[in-house]
Amino acid sequence: MPSLPAHRLADIAPFHVMELMARAKDLEADGRDIIHMEVGEPDFPTPQPVVAAAQAHIAGGRVRYTAALGLPELRTAIAGFYARRYGLSVPASRIVVTAGASGGLLLAMACLTEPGSEWLLTDPGYPCNRHFVRCFEGRPIAIPVNGESNFQPTVDDLARFWNERTAGALFASPANPTGTLLADQTLTDIARFVRQRGGQLIIDEIYHGLTYGRDARSALEFDDDVFVVQSFSKYFNMTGWRLGWLVVPPRFLRDIEKLAQNLFISPSAAAQYAALAAFHPDTIAILEERRDEFRKRRDFLAPALETLGFRFPAKPEGAFYLYADCSQLTDDSTRFASELLESVGVAATPGLDFGSNLPERYLRFAYTSDVTRLAEAVDRIRCFLGSA
Image 1 (cartoon, one colour):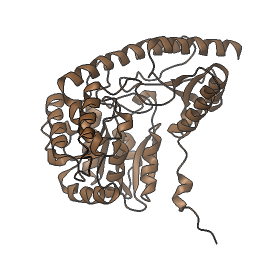
Image 2 (cartoon, helix red, strand yellow; image 1 turned 30 degrees about the vertical axis):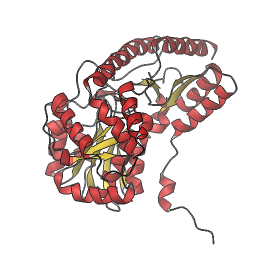
Image 3 (cartoon, rainbow, N blue to C red; image 1 turned 120 degrees about the vertical axis):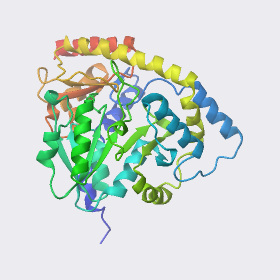
Image 4 (cartoon, one colour; image 1 turned 90 degrees about the vertical axis):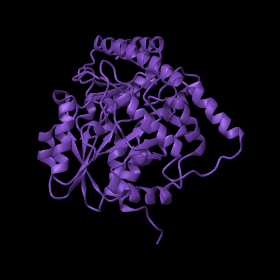
């Protein structure tokens, strides 16, 4: 009898946005002009100082393994970033450099998840998180959230879903797909609740730096005993370098190190040497200009979509997404997204990717194109709706 995939694979769905993007690429190959609003990737190039640092390292030819926890000088640089940006003293010893934020989440889940243990996640939420839990034989438990709670969980939500099998909770602020932030007091209350029940809290902060109107405060300010996941992909514009980091409570460091040694050997050396330049003042100046550009895009696109009949139950304060309620325009966002792509060449992500909490009502628009292209996308959508 031929071998079969492990049973857990039946619970791991495809990343639908990648399949939609593949269709968009096929249409482009046929000569169609596609406006990409489906994938969460900054359109800006990696800042030149970062590229130059990588080139200098590669030119030396000694591109070798690093320590499993990352270059000591990069861990120190990240600690310095926490001191400057947040006013926090985070020991470099607690910072683990990872193969993207995904690598950090895998390490955390491998360390903390027992077979059958439960993890609380928001719905809608980043789809890979529930699959990371399942990969280690845990059970992802979806907390339905909506605009009334800013698409974020509350302590009452945790109390309702927490039981003797619950190992912890994984939340994001700013969140994907909604772009909303946890309020400071809510984050404080959640951290206290999880700690009192002997669970572990993981906070995804990969969109920190990309907030508009207020700066996000790190969960480490409210509770020192949390795992914090960060990335060089979003704010630092280094998606393809596949580099991130994980801030780890001290008692877990040795176990995380063993896992990193076995699962990854080490993060990319070239990417780590490149990232040393990410914290230079001239690089930060470039990134802050780009943050302001993202804010301008959000401020253009949200009201423009509202004139077409989309609604926003909560105002996005961060990331580069608009999670738009399209229920006045369609009863099936997946079909709507497909028709939008095929008819007028606008690619947006249907809610199906982000969970089972009314996904048919929502589309996620990524404002990762300049305002001129966003305006063209709005015009195309208007034409599509006029002809529908």
